[in-house]
Image (cartoon, rainbow, N blue to C red; front, top):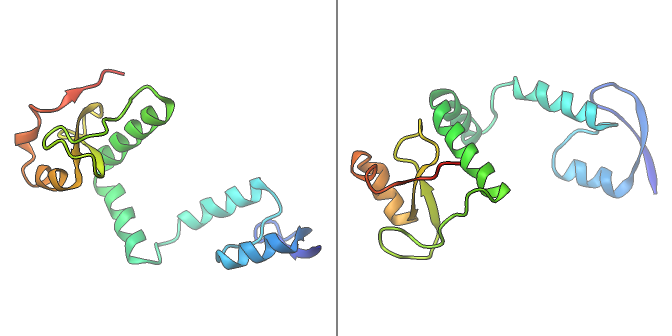
Length: 139
């Protein structure tokens, strides 16, 4: 069953499935008639100040440490594409629970050491100590 709704960006009226309308409203989103309008609306909303504490913290981090965000992005993309295969156990204690890549130097995005969450917390407190343990994955 379809219902007529108005696009939040171009103000054009269009038909939309009732189940999709409910889903959009449940997620607190606005109705858009096409991907182009959805993209424009999203880009416009990015210009507004964040509304939650978490979003504000995230935006501040991105502005303060762009090299950190870039290094994490590059490793995530290399992992997704299969060029980088992450370790499944901590290189320090051997634990297999919640293993994460650690960047001793964000300016070298593929200089990594894989650590469990507990060892990673220790590594973040004593940065200089970990750089010699990291492996440089030249991708």
